[in-house]
Image (cartoon, rainbow, N blue to C red; front, side, top):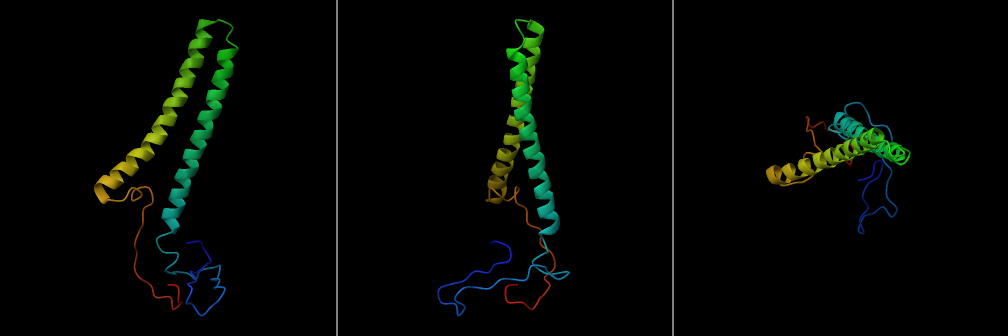
Length: 131
């Protein structure tokens, strides 16, 4: 569900819907289980995105080095090594996601169980209708 929104059904008394307050009070149920997990998940996605961009740039630079080698066997070998190392890094990144999804499906019955963890904490009544 998108943040700051609620579901509106056909038989609801509100025609348009309601907008939740943007700032959650301290210790609210909506914030529980999302803070650290969401932060850690975003950091991992940022690291994987950075690794993918780095690998792409590394392949482009190695390809330029390969084209400008001019028949020098050492330069050609160095460019091929750099290309293969970048491709191997991309395979490791994609393989880690695939293995996490496979193990999550085999062990827990949900492919996203490991990739999107949920941390449960104490139930805190907040007194709002969407809790």
